[in-house]
Amino acid sequence: MLGKIEISLDQIKSNWTALNFASNGKAAAVVKADAYGFGMTRITKTLINAGCKYFYVANLDEAIELRKDIINKDITIAVFEGFFEGTELTYFNNQITPIINNLEQLKRLLSLFRQGKKIRAILNINTGMNRLGCNSKEIEFLQKNKNIVNELEWDFIMSHLANSEDFKNVINDIQLNKLLEFSKNFPDIKLSFANSCGIALGSRFCLDQTRPGIGLYGVNGVGENIKLKSKDLKLPIKLYAPIIQIKEVGIGEAISYGGIDITNRKSLLATIGIGYADGWIRQLKNNTSINIDKQQCKIMGNITMDSFVLDITKIKNNSLNEGDYLCLLDNYNIKDLFKKLDLISYELFTLMGSRLIRDYK
Image (cartoon, rainbow, N blue to C red):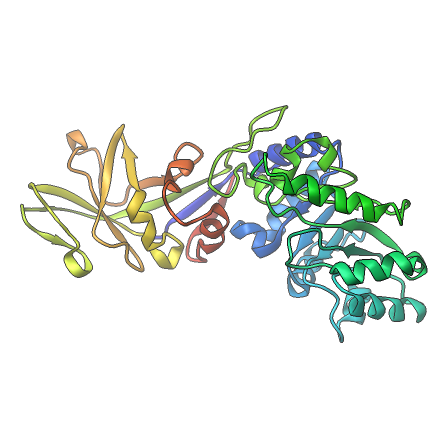
């Protein structure tokens, strides 16, 4: 028996629609890392049906995979990693949009352009994230050599917020002002800036395009529902795992590897068929009790590769049976799951393994 993730495509569409509304109708979508683990092609097609036409992925391999399924050239696929030597014709032939992260990549694009192979691109400038994008010296060079930029065809000048989940952080405004100041040199090029939580910062951060990613799944990094003026977003997934054995044990019995938990009463234990190979990682034990019939059932022993043990002694009337599925994660318990843990929703979602069945609703 395998664990499964129920994925509501209607709720994902609803989340994007709300994000798009808050973005003044200018939202793209970030579907990198297999759409955060939930199926890149399926999620992309759902969002196309919702009206989205612009998508971002992490690297060229993801872009090629997506382009094989999304052959409509009116749908843009842009790549965060940069425009590397030797990839120029791959971008051109597949009509994939490169993001230019430094001057060497810009020169590479210019060379391709002058050969008559024109592709639109995005110019990324670093305003404080210090991850990708042209640095301060390169920005200064571009400001003094505007003709180089103006010779090319651009969809956007972009940057990326480093502290968008902290609404009161002054660095958000500093980054915005740096982007706006640079853009004065190129008034005809549109701007892309806000990520999911950046949209919630307000319309002045949304500019000409927003790039929601985690927001498609309704939550921020610590599992809190993202709140927009129009509506609160909701987690569109539920994670279920099967009960593969139920057994009685006596007092003083050690449970699982290392015997880190010992029963202090006669107990009824259920072994749940999901483990860290499925993304249900070991540190979740520290903060997780599973709510069953309004009873908090504690994880006993370590979470192992394929299973963990749950104390179901409090559940009355023997209502649980081997083969039943328990809901481990949904919109109502995700926030509690991350309390006091050095873990974020991005990690948990992208760690959910290939053994888990994706059940689209």
